[in-house]
Amino acid sequence: TKGVLPAWQELPREAEVTLGALRAYTGVDLPILFLSYPWLDRSHPDPHGTMLQTLAPLLSAVVRYLDKGGGGKDASMGVFIDFMALPQRGYTSGFDPQVDDRTPKQMQRFRAGLSSISTFYAHKHTYTICLDGPLPTSAVNKAGYNKRGWCIFERLLSSLIKNCNCFLQLSKWVVADRNVQSWFEIINMCAAMRAPPMPPDAFTEMMCKGVEREAAAPGSGIRFTCGKDLTDVILPQYSQAFLKLMGEATKLEYASLGWTDQDAETLVVALTYAASREALGKLEKLDLYNNE
Image (tube, rainbow, N blue to C red):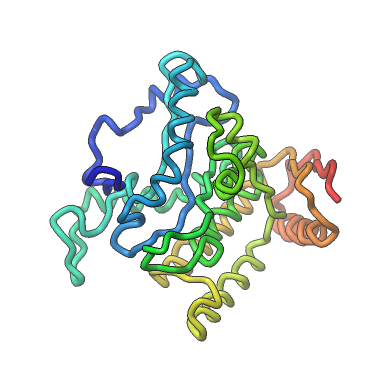
């Protein structure tokens, strides 16, 4: 339907970006935008196109940037929206509560994508776009961005080592000036204030306690549509990504983030955790300039 996101199975071929077009991009960061957003309904993330309308001005700005030669001749930028990028249940032959209708090849693609989620969001030079504003009244799942387990996971992954220009919160644009036309103006306006890195043990405790609160009193904790996502995907991937990124980093840049003494203490705990697992062997510089 016009104005509503299609599932991967419904996506027209011309909507797929090629590896060659991505490699033609000559900008400093990687030309891939990963959307972090809460699904509004279990069967479709945005059944009425409300969130797509919020996202559309940003995508238009990206298109204008590319049309004017930004990023190099014949360059493209890719947008990763899980519903469109990975095969979805119920969209191959129809939804059956007892049987997953995806083919073996589709399931292979889905699992491959799911296994790489932490790499997508945590990479220093990919863009994470947080659709973190208020939910539309039509949302079936009323839990906001900061109550969603997947969104918390993606946000904290994006806080580990991300380039400051690559982690954007669209809520900052909504409350400011939606008439801004330039891609770079949007980047400057929506740049997120990254939280200090959270070590995997603290992350596990926070997520598990949040799920327990939600089970005891709905709306008070952290929500997952599928409980196995936490234990089978999110906890192991966060731990692996944290240790890998800290282990490979020669420089950790956390300048001008408005961090307080408490944030600095959180950072110390995270670095101590990494060092105890021999994951800071390549680190040469820690940049904390211009914090409180």
